[in-house]
Length: 498
Image (cartoon, rainbow, N blue to C red; front, top):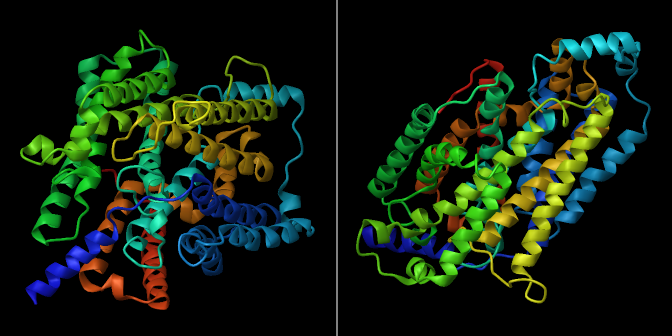
């Protein structure tokens, strides 16, 4: 019996080892299902007010579009994600062509006279930051993909090209790890913007103490995961982070280093520039020293060498976090240009242009870093978190954010045209999926719950021997339970801060 368990554990480890990934275009097509499904959600909401009020049927449709849609893209429709996009886009076009719900038309407020607009604009200057619907959509959909993939990868219905690569290459799950860090960087810009608005600066020592408050729970989670994985003899992929290291340790060590990096801004007044310099320096060290060979081939003889992947890739993840923080510095403020006299629509156009420019810039840098004819010809490596990996993550997430912002701009102009906090909150609620909002609200707690449920499934179900129908049944059930917990926490107005 023990021999069978050991051999099955080895089979599971082999199942996620020595993989080479797939093309970036294929990854983009699969992930595009999420935004396209949200377009259908947006049409239903903006034209038919389908999700207001939020009824059981509304939840079911919300679940099918924003949860099961991405799940299908990475499983049954992994060979034809564009077909799935078409299946979502076709009803969206048809519904958009129908007359809008008359109730919505009655709710539209008449345009305020210029004097009233000016008065409302001046009254909203006090609150320089606002909760953006497109950011909620982006972060919520990212967490959905992450929670789905960490269990789906253990089933044969999940393509091996989407699982994490061994060393070189790109995959959906490799992108997910970096995107999680990039997303955390975006929201980390909020306290910095508040400081700037108040005209104060927090001393380094206080920043470090504050950062440790955020680090400690994550480091504890990392230790708990380490003990549980070793204690339960759970299958693990050692070359991913190392023998003892895990993703929670990477997340836990980021805050103090980010706090230190803020002091460098006096010399380099741009988080994006700091991210590029850090990523480039990391790449130079990898190429010009024996570090790359050490990470990939050295024997695991001591604590450092046992965890060399997690420790040495930390610099790359720090660069990704800083790139996300730079994005947060200009998408979180209420106006793209606070000193401008432009109206709300012009401000939103300016934000879209700026976001699109950054997405293009990161993409161009990635092209020159990886192209063999016109660039450096470097390969992407999540294991090393090298410079091409940093650029790929930054380019993808910038483009994804731009797409979410464009969808919101087209279907929910009432949000950025709001003139008072109450109407803005109403517009925010109308423009965000209840499911995605719930995932965004308790993201880290739900990620922890998803990890626990993934472990439970793997300990009780022989995932490698499960057929397609049973696999989909388990995944749909798992996704529904996690989503149910998320929505229940949101309904009870509970925010679990870790």
